[in-house]
Image 1 (cartoon, rainbow, N blue to C red):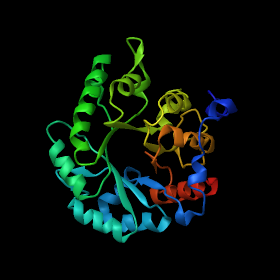
Image 2: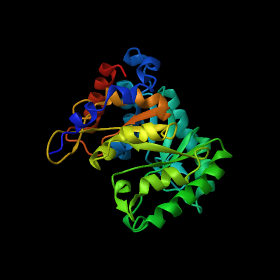
Image 3: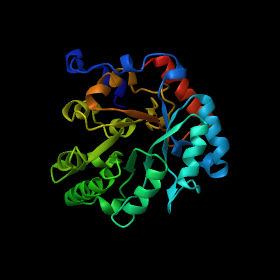
Length: 283
């Protein structure tokens, strides 16, 4: 199996010289770090007990949240203002939300997320039927620009979250490159999921270096050192986050969120481990 840790560590020091260190901005103990959680990680717990689950997240130390529970004008079956008040009482803030946004529902989405005080609306996934050819990505870029004009009027940024399929070759190009090149940086940002970039066999530093300022949000998740390349807690895998975070300033990163799509341990235990490991890294 390709050794991804070695893949990252063989990057020359010179290739990082232009980056300002993120850890200088976020140095300190766990109490004053700004560590986010993508709530998809604890989706089953959120389904059963929203307030109790969020209380546990707050007790661990997370203070930024990214939602994955928007539907029909509500967040986790709550009015957006009520959800915002709940997490405010728990000393957390909703930064971003994963939403299947379209021309048809954009006004409703903007209204709900403005009410919730949310700063980013992120398109989280493309169905296979929506990514069959390169023109699909070109149409998506046009859609993101179009929707970005609408969200900007409400002081909300729209963005796109990658998986691995965006890096497949289509007509000699990668869909992700089309999205980056054909979207307006003033209107559209990106949430880079480092796990999926590695899973695709791509060096993420290539994108962080060559597209400065485009990656305002990051998903931090780790990969095990086995053949299955499965998810594991941040800091327990092979991705060298300490080196990658040196690129955060140039890449434009403003917020990052721990996410673990599938957990071998109870999800609350996994997000505790990830949080503790991030604190120890002193990023």
